Image (cartoon, rainbow, N blue to C red; front, side, top):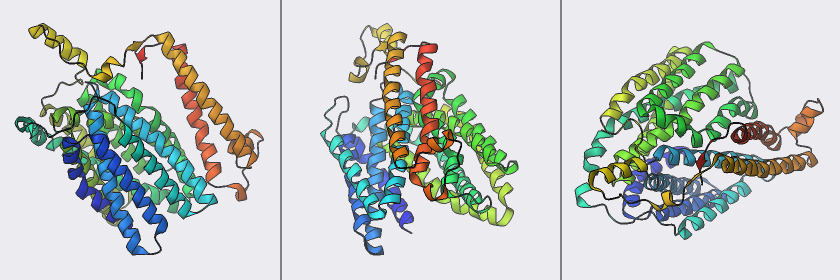
Length: 454
């Protein structure tokens, strides 16, 4: 009930958040959302009964709507003609934050309980609110959109087919995920930690890939990227109907995660680019459409599962994904956008050839020169060294606490049952993440390539 209350309030406030983000500096709107998140966590920590818990859930729903819609709006405005790269960076950052949040949550919950965990969440959100409120960076103008473009030049209506696809596919994904989690825990007898390990490879892919996927998606185009991603989602759902091993599930999910990591930034960038001056309104409606799907999908798929069984639910999800793959090119064509995201350099060239005047260059573009392959390789090696020092230090701490999964594996011993828990899970998940980070970072040395200075 608490989750439902939070979701309903989030759905109500997302369009409001979009309108506010169009008229105000979205950083301030996001700061207000983070502050409400902090109040929500404080309410949960102080709650001794359902009334205060429901108030906390409602405040959290409103805060989440303000925070995420404003953040999407800010990213779209600052994208400087390369929205897929900007939204990919955002998705990677949120994924890393989610991993860190899960690690801290498991640790605090195991050692201190729920109230300290809620207070930790409150503190993190309060810090985010302060940082957003103090951010005085340039590049985003506040103020109501002009009357001539108050409706986004009709683009808001043209976005409806794409938003419909987003809602339907989000519902299919959420419904199938709910059933898969129940299947792994009830029929396979997996513990929550073992279930997490099944999804760990895909989670790692989903964290690391989005920031770099735009190098491929910008070349192949929006329609191809979204079509292939939805087709991969259909393969994932169809494969679940005939495959039963946990290793097979993990491999299928890793494939689907790679495609989601490419598709979601393209989808968000397309919505932002088609919105005209009303990026906030478009992102508010887009996020609302996805949330509607997430709320409706699980109960509908539950009915399919109860009446027709597991295979029917999987095939239903696969059929929805295939229909989305077929419909995506038409939905994108209706927006009148180029297949490949329009970059600032292209606009400058067109403006110069048309009238000799140069189009304005954003502050972000002036601060983001292309760096040489050698410098990029040195930067990646330095960052890898920092990550490795943190990884080794954490493993030593876990070893001292007798909670290092890696230490037990190196000794060829099984983890004693009394030592299983959140800390052991953190160490076990962190190892493959460090391995992937190592391979990616050193790939710039083995296969040199240029990059943008961040």
